[in-house]
Figure 1: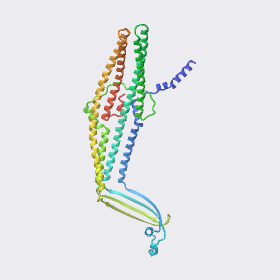
Figure 2 (figure 1 turned 120 degrees about the vertical axis):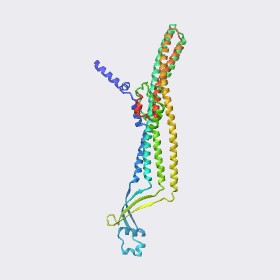
Figure 3 (figure 1 turned 90 degrees about the vertical axis):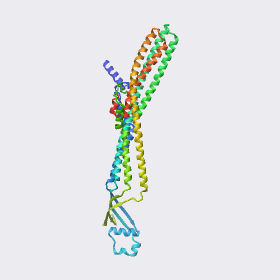
Figure 4 (figure 1 turned 180 degrees about the vertical axis):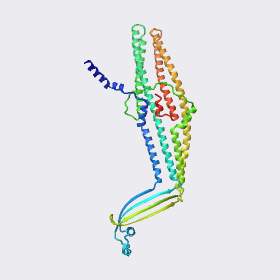
Length: 450
């Protein structure tokens, strides 16, 4: 019976929300990133743009293929020209059809025409080849843009993930401080009853407890907001709050500013996308110039005409080669000017992007160094403040310090803990921002933060 009772209690514990949460493994940063890359609307938009550019590249190549169409035309009428022509096409024209009355007032005639027509562009001054090259570079630019969007999503998830962890630390600290404040109030109350402290000490302890409760409420609110931001970054608005795998404080690889700038110049996907867009637009300008040149195309038509669907008739065909030159290309001049202006705009955007990226890398490099030093300082300050609080607590118990001194030391110790965890996550975030500035913030690289 005891074994049966224990088994039932174990099952109830496992089926409870707390039990289920304990059995669920913590969500890692990599899992959050993978989910975001699959669900975030920005990633979906980028993939759609990539697919559209790929389809456009395939469509551009169809200009090299011959065009072939099939038609089935059914008609009937007594228009003199129509009737004369259809009799000729059907091979049914006779001597009596030359009578004036038959020519001027023909009887209605029907025609079933089955036809094939084709056209093949043989030469267009290399315009099609340049259109294809432009579409290919636009496709590559869209793929690079997708990579850039993915890195933005990874950076945002890293930031939101760490914000949740920091908010959880603040809640833990606030809960600990509230329990400490409750214990202090109990201790002060006993000292007041024993005549070892005055009533104002108890009032100060009560005010301190109220402030700690308020801090806990605020910390829990910050945690809810952090989870809302993480849900938004992941594109999962219905994601339930769960355990996250902590990011442990540790140092990250160091590199020089020159190395980071060189890496950014080669790896930044948005810079690559802009360069590929430049090449695509350059090819578009070339295609616009080619449109002024001559074009050569071959064409052919075959048609079978019958008075009814099943009646015999006659067929005819025609084939030829057409050479055409636009002798008044007013619209093409405007199109060339438009494409040239777009190319000039992309050139200016490239220069601006290069300058901005250099600034981003330089700023990230400085922030990375500052964050590393801040972490070391915060760790030392937390250790020192904890020791100061221990000493003042002993002095207060011995009647050698006031309650104000003790509360002030508690505030300093609480702030030092908050500063330390802020420095821990700030250090990891600074490294993530440096990777993003370099263009190397992939899911694998982000996994190294944990």
